[in-house]
Length: 128
Image (cartoon, rainbow, N blue to C red; front, side, top):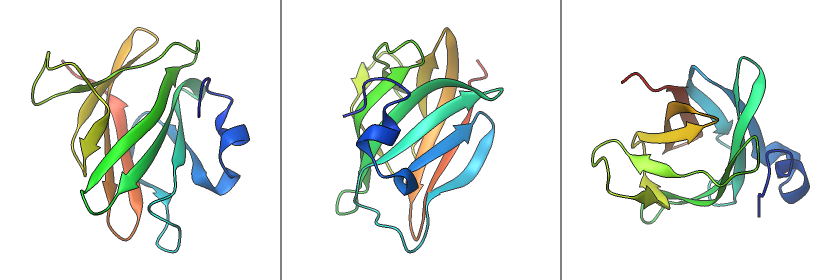
């Protein structure tokens, strides 16, 4: 689906794409009237510069988000890692509101996605 950060516009409807700046806290990426089960895209930025992109889908029955794709700004595949179980290997799905570590362009960040009446995202630098 998403191969490089510029592709969400081509692969998803514009209302399903959110730009998320590092430091975002509970930013709404799909509002209360939007579908929670359709794929959505996140263009991740730091200092206004695109550093990566994710496409994901929420599965309400299991309360998990599954990633269809995750790339950095240089179009390299990214990995999502557990904070609770470091070294457990890359994740392809994360439970609702679970914090994970992602590495983009040599920097580490913490990401969490949560769904209820809205889909929201937290995205910030990883403090080791």
